[in-house]
Image (cartoon, rainbow, N blue to C red):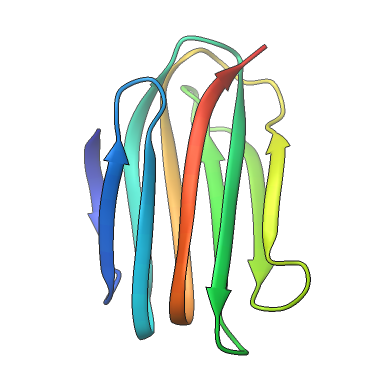
Length: 117
């Protein structure tokens, strides 16, 4: 994974790369963005992410396809609705931009993405 931006004030641990990238993140009142280029051989992506944080934290995942079109934009907050599992809209195969925006996290979370049909 080619990291495009890492302004997150916490720690990001890459747990897998290649076609099925995944990472864990932790922080203490940390915010920022982590984005990377991802080669998607399909037109859609399956995304899973979660956040476990004190009240007020959030994580947002944005996917842009090979044309730069936004095909997914989901946010979860540190409450009962703190997990997302779903599939992006259809986009163009190729190099996608994956952006994870973490806001005021006081805890941890995880993220994974896979090509989807």
